Image (cartoon, rainbow, N blue to C red; front, top):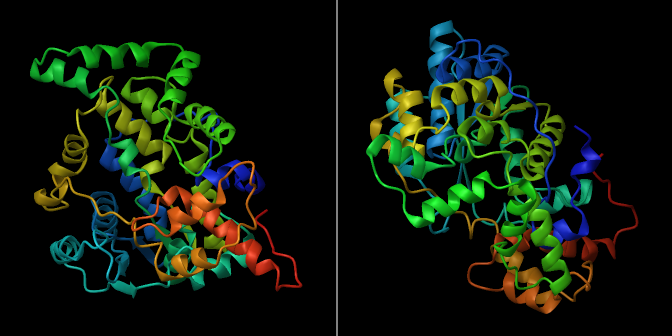
Length: 391
């Protein structure tokens, strides 16, 4: 990937995400493999290459990757992968220790790295600001978390669960329910079907009207954001195979992958995302058929349930951890109180509204890149050396 193309633009900094889309790679032939076998094939190089680590939050995606990696290592007589967990102290909704303990106990693992943090991973905390001074603003804003995780994987390979929310979802879930459960489609279902079958320009026009409103954006910036966001999420089709073929289409995901490659190189580590592996996506598309599995839970039960890799209670859980407050803590509020408006384009953002957002009880995470850009501009006043940027 061309690293420079994933540096956030001023509009992307103002909106907190990379915008637009690129042509996705074509999925290969699945070779008759089941999704689980294809996932094993995607994970094997990491397990076989030496010390393998797995980012492990206790959620379904990271737990599934960890379970498959452990099972594979034991089958092949290789060293077992080591889960790496970051726990945020005093952060409501961000902790899942009971699920983490359940999975580690069920897998019979004895080697587990658990890091407890408080303000260290704030988006303008010590880890993040060191990254900002080396590279400028990177996407995502919580790259500081990945820097810490990859630091633990130095000399080895880190496996992530990135992509699970997308790849296990079903675009036309109502059609699946109608076909399998006999439920008659509702009017809203028919509208969604018509939307999915409409030409891409029409889908983008509809999506522009439904883009998230970010209150700190100037009107022209909000319109530009809506148009670029719609381009990124319009998709390549409504069938399950088309949905999976377009998983790597948005620049948000590609940019995150690129940033993690950069951070891996800094830490003498490798990083891999097996749930985004083209072979796994191709096998999953074949198994799900045109309409997919019907739900995220059904997809995970189909892929992992029969192999007895994870507790059923974990495969069927619905609640997810939330990290709204994990990355915007005391350093964020301290900087926001001193913020003088420098470093951001006043034609794109209302800086006073941004300050109010950063000081709110639960800051909108979409404001985090702007926070980092403002911090970097503030720090540059006292620095004589230029900032080293990505690329």
